[in-house]
Length: 369
Ligand SMILES: Nc1nc2c(ncn2[C@@H]2O[C@H](COP(=O)(O)OP(=O)(O)OP(=O)(O)O)[C@@H](O)[C@H]2O)c(=O)[nH]1
Image 1 (cartoon, rainbow, N blue to C red):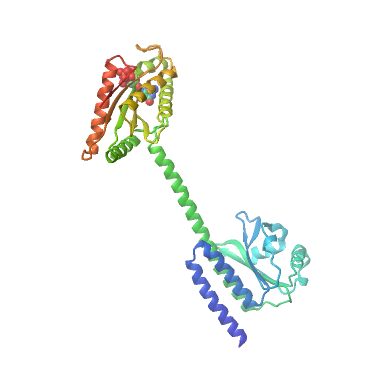
Image 2 (tube, rainbow, N blue to C red):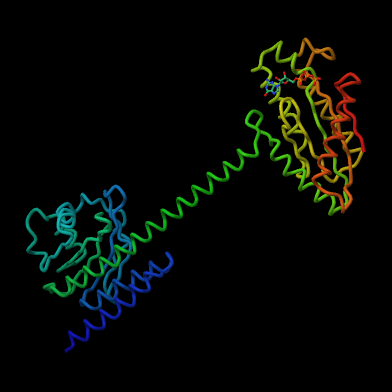
């Protein structure tokens, strides 16, 4: 009658634990598996119960969970990353039959000498282990030791340990799938971030592209409206770039575009500043929370820093080195202005200032407001 009661209690406990495991979060899963092996250990009157997991290459095994009866020695700490070759006979049995039963370790065959030595070290008299198999893959094993006395493992105990191994296998499989999903999700997020960065970046110069500019100017106008603070838009155009390309070749031309972009990027460092390649040999800068003096100073510094690059341009009609012309427009948007038409206006105004700078001899900048 006692045996039946023990069996009923065990079955109930395992059934309850397996439903908990089905819905458990990864953090709770660990505890649940500990409870499962404790339930089996108590049911089988064992002194120690444990789970080992193999690494992906099936070279090492690690004791991941352990339950020990009060007063018995725990071994989890000295059983981390144990080479499976240290226990070859045991591993072979588990791999081939998915079960390893020893009622009396003194009766182990001579070829199991390494196993016998290890069991003696742990004072084990009888042991049973069942492979944890998911999708035809041996992931590890769950086992149980009798330390105090020998034990003849009963068919019912074997059946129950197989059930436990099955529950753990399903849990491990679910966890692996979960980890793989998380991993895939992270990879996708990373790829998306990279793609997003690429979508907003100019391939040649590495600074923002026109698409990013369209987004940024929209946001900056909104901010400028909200804060009622002036906003400047500059259009920067390289002078006589066609003849630069004709003289030095397209590759040198590309190099010059990169140098100009870098110089602009270095100059406009504030969070409220933004530079982009607008297209071809034309760049834009958006300067927020500014005023006329500050914008004129920025134009001056920009002209200077491009001159300071001293990129030779022998066929330029203006200087023996590369220069730019700049057109700017400074504006404080009214709160009821349409952002779309304001963007068009700002570009048109800056463009017309640029046209005047070009007409007046290039290598200069004008700011309208
Ligand atoms: N190397 C290189 N050249 C480019 C690129 N994009 C545009 N260009 C060249 O930039 C030159 C622009 O020439 P134009 O629009 O005639 O202007 P410009 O010669 O600079 O004359 P102004 O602007 O009036 O001073 C063209 O020769 C384009 O081929 C690029 O990505 N790389």
